[in-house]
Amino acid sequence: MSAASAATFVGIMGLFNGFGRILWAALSDRIGKMPAFVGILGIQGLALLALPHAGSVALFWILAAIIDTCYGGGFCTMASTAGKFFGVTHAGGIYGLMLIAWSIGGVVGPLLVSSLAGSDNNYTLAFTVVGVLALIGAAIPLITKQPAKPALTE
Image (cartoon, rainbow, N blue to C red):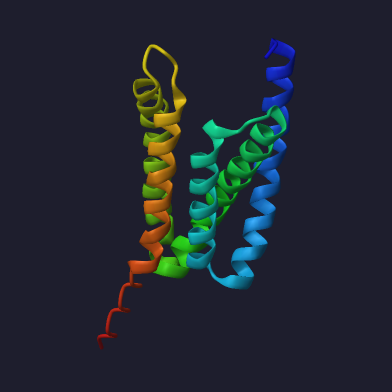
C-alpha cells in the first residue's frame, strides 16, 4: 500500500471509530450497557480472527471498519457503564482506572502483536491471540455481578 493509500485508510477508519461511538452509545441505551459490551467485544473478536484470512482488500477494509466501529463504541460506553454498574459516586474513579487500563493496552498490545508476528511478519497468530482475548473479554460481562448497594446507616 502506498503512503497516500495508507493515509486514506487511516482517515477513513477514524470515521468508523467516530461512527461507532454514536452507534454503540445509542444501542447501549436501548439494550443495556453490559449487553452492549458483550456485542462490542464479541463482534470485534470475530472480526480480529477473520482479519488475517481476508482474501481481498475490500474484505480487509470491511473487517477493519467493523473493528474500528467497535473500538469507538467501547471507548464511548465505558463512562456510562461505570456509572450504571458501580453508581455515579464511584464512576469517576472507576472510569479513570478503566482509562489507565486502556492506555496500558495501547502500549502492551502493539508490543504483543509485534512479538507474536515475529521477524517474518506473520500476523495470523497475532490477530488470533488478540481476537481470542477479545472473545474472553466478551464473556466477562456475562459472569460479573453488580456490586451490592451499601446498607444505609443512621
